[in-house]
Image (cartoon, rainbow, N blue to C red; front, side, top):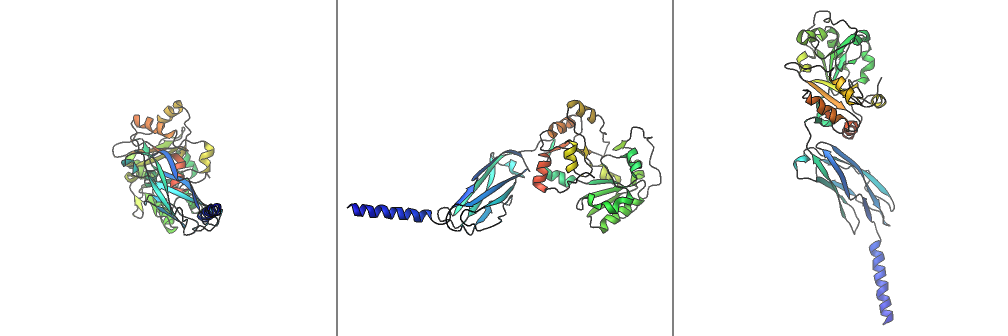
Length: 357
């Protein structure tokens, strides 16, 4: 009798070893809570898949439950003890319309006999965007660069708000400072060089270079010194020369003025220098007094024009209050970039972020 019992125990022990043998998948985490984010925010985290068994873990697949999530798998086979990290990216656009909390999932399949399917849940609250907030996607759609082609001395005396100064003679050597896939609006004194500059950019693979028709002289005829920044000692006189109204790759001043973009980067000068949007102006705005004084200098749009002010910080923690303050002052298109530069990088990497020259 004792011998039979011993045999039975041995069989159970052997069966247990068989059950433990083979590949064994361990997934970390199996639930990812992302807290509260704005609709459109891209949630990112690393999912780690490990083989804790004693045989190869094979035929691994990571299958997102929707097109909103990407999960590229670097390797689909793990030897015992090996692991692999999977970069999960979940785009929350339009998920605020669902009951909260909400989320998505990814399913991991493999040859693990005990757990052939493991589901990882990604959950949190996706809230609607507030009137003074804007997502990285909206910013990307609205973004353009304004280039002043005049000499540095003329630029210093007066320029259009947010313009980048690249003198016409320097343009061929400085093309790398401009984004190739975004509208680039160019102007000079009267519009002749800006048409030539638009041709140069097109020849070098830029998608949307456009000369402002008539240059600054054409702008002045349409709007005077609206959206113009003067040096304190400058004599405020109209631009010289007769506007040149070319037809190649040109836009009317109204095309720019109807949604005039002004990007204000409130990060430290050091952070700004490491990577900023072309044309963004660095104004740290640390106190309410500084915010009030700066806001008083902003130009007021006239009929048919708007001033789209985007406030940018590192993580969105400070920009919202400033954008809300500007809206209360009547700047209805003032917005904070939700999540700041960190959210931009999560969605687009370093695209459009250029180091200071």
